[in-house]
Image 1 (tube, helix red, strand yellow):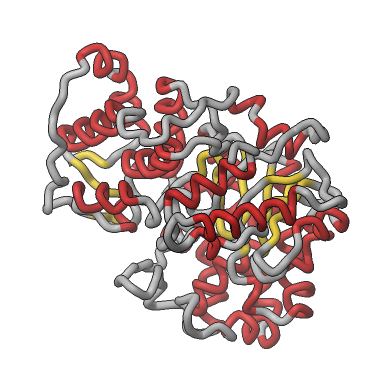
Image 2: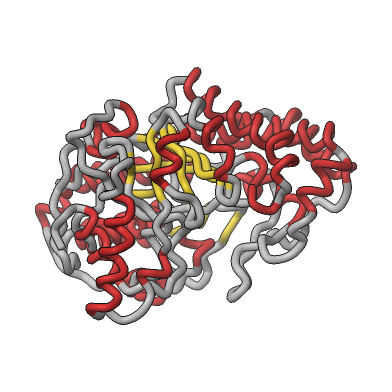
Length: 432
């Protein structure tokens, strides 16, 4: 058995031309039930790997119900221009948080066909690439791909178990239990080194390279967004275990053990920066830092303990030439004016006005739309709500055209109508 690696992926990509020339049809069999999982890498036989990769590549474009248009090359894409060279003549680019995943019928069908769960999928370059590309196959007017992955791959690389038992979201079943264990984790990162931690995430970089190669061979020019959880989000899960319970555990550590907490978050910051640097080197066109759990902290605690760390990540990325950069401090959008000096784009949640944010920051703004408007039947009433919500932002007299990325203020949850998602994308582009 061989682990999927850059060598294996390289072999499959070398044979890509032959696969397209041959063009033979076949049925992909479910992965062997004897597949082993070690840390975050899935072991496949050479035959399984070749068959899986070939299936994905041969089907790109063949199951696209919307026949989406092909944007310009990623280096000159509308999204990258909006973040780096804003102009009033630029229409808003669009992409969606969690656009790849459970709201898509083809995603559920893919999981069932291959007999895999979410953790299997984010551990395999071939699955990462296939799921990343599904929304580009379905939707027109989608201006970016977002890497199909998860915010907890870094804790897993640090040796912390991550599970997804079903119905309760992704979890850390055995979080750090004491400040002594927090100190020990900090020492462990120091002992192994940042590079050794990120080396364990090479399967993600293999996925990035496979995505970019497949997009190039398929004529897809959208940029690819890489991402990582922010240091505090990583810290929160490592000591709390779940987003559903123990929501006060981060506040407790920040206040009771500020020195020990800061030390671990400092090491996590170095890991995040290196992880994103490697994503960018592997082919991502821009990167996002996602602070998912900022809303669990009191504003003063966030500003005193988390915000400086988040700003530091943005500035370190800039020093290393990793960009353009985006940041989403969910539940803590009051920090966007400061974050706007460290990132090329900041995001607003569903309770924060994108237009007001534009007036308060010195960078591009994205997000704000409520995904709830995309749930339900595709009716004139539901379309009217979408059109009204878009007009409220894009037709506001204070709206700054050329400095806004149309996106949601929260990720797609799985119940959204694909027809309404498409309608939203069309309305933003002025095509509906």
